[in-house]
Length: 335
Image (cartoon, rainbow, N blue to C red; front, side):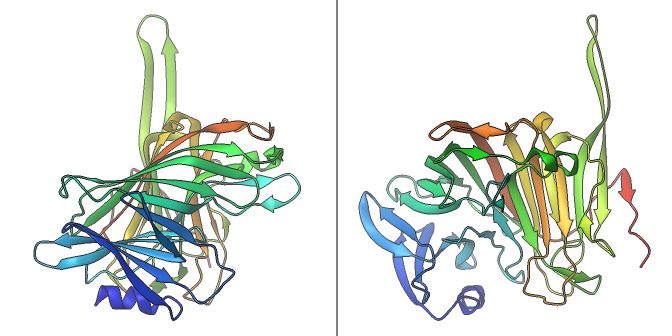
């Protein structure tokens, strides 16, 4: 049924079964928009076509093959939990504010190569390529899908970004922590009664003292911000991360059971990352009007064509809705 819900949300299209090794299976969806970006697929070193969307399924013992990840040629990555959960928000990979062009589109998957032989119970390892079709690319994407749980699905990504032209990063966005978005999470929030996700949480560094005798002593606290009545940038002065994770929680199982989204920032390190979010008020439940990301503090202003920006390693995951513990809470503004 979940597969039906997922496919029904896409434009009318033809589905192609690309492989099934008993544990993992892949469906390619051919969209009806000829101008949409597509993902070229290679299975066991053989070309398997290009598709606007790919749906990866995991074979649960009691549920059978169940969608766990949808990847779009336009850049969205959705991690999916089994029923009763329904598809929720989406992850998008690296993007930045250009000095002249504004916020550039995130890099999207353009090619994936699957090896289906070997131990089917092991993590599924995939190689691929990324591009934002303008200024950034990666030819060494590595993805590793862990065997799924019914309440948690995750994938680790590693890639090196290279400039395809001279680029200028708009560092005037630094005070808002919106220079270079390593990875972002997008979802819908209309009100407390109508939303996919409703709270942002991270662990922040509150104090750090270092001396040559005893080393560094760091204090941390978990910090949460409810999205009620919020608009614009969520954090005025976000602190750098005290651990790897920034999460966009769904604290309730209503109005629909959409999952909590989270990113573990492995490289650049949490020390070089600050969280931020932006909320645009909308009345349309189909619009991702929340964007939550980790901002890369060490991004440079200029990169010459063919130069490497850096290496990136993140873990994207979803899990079932729940309310987290919070040491401090940002109180929602008055309506």
